[in-house]
Length: 431
Image: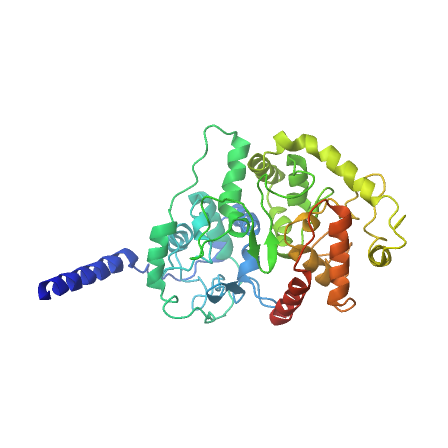
């Protein structure tokens, strides 16, 4: 028994040593911040466009904070993480990082000092980026104004906050490597895949995650919950009545507006703004990629009937429904804008076609009704007011239930009251 115990203890020690060797990454020597004029202007410009297409501002800028100075709270099932300062400040940012150190963080999820980064930073996507694109990103960030902004401590509890343990997560879920083009697809498709899977890391929001926070590799783009919104499926399982065609995807990704689906709101609203910095050909490439993911060509014939059904719902709001108090309420509160006759209009989204009304979860519809859509989020100069202060929970529930009942053939939502109360509480907690 003594020998057995000693043997087990020896195996434990050897295992710990082996894990330590697996987790250990050496520090890369600090450098003095390079002079901004040491980078070619065209390289900086390329990096600026890539940073926009990668939505770096969104995660590395706190509300009301300085650009790229970090401090943005990311709520995870394990606690809150705060994004870090990626300005070239040598003490609190990445000013002392060499290009090699920056590339290692992007491709391998390892900081300059050798510590392992938490996967809230999507290095599992950025590992696909080419060396040239990483070089351009480095040039852009190292030419930004330095901001002194120390990192904020998160709330991830012990022992999950031990960065060495990320080596185990990586062993299970991370495979480093550049993007490999699919020889059976077109150059445009491969460009879209590179951008969607790498730079723009679309799966980080639209792919469900397992209990350890890793994306479910067998369910790419199947939909997930992000920042108290639903990121819908991007596959053929998307519940939109009119399937997403390649042209509609390009319009939506390039402008934030789709006549057949609505506008980009919530966590999706920064995406078209970021992608607008990329060449139009890149936006088209992403649309080509996702049109293939959702089998758009095979379902294109469904668009016409879906629009016809929506227009039949939209004809004469309230007509024949005088005895329905919910219809009268909707007509008074919503129909002046959300009423189309003849054909859908981008500035007046038809709710029978809108994804939020057709999702199995009412979260997105409730979020928009409570918070509205600002001009910065949607169509420039066009806003939808929020009704959080004007309508009670019962009012919001009445309109949502009415739309579900009259604009779809889907079963009613059964948890409206509880969902509305939860969303209000979440909004209050984050203000």
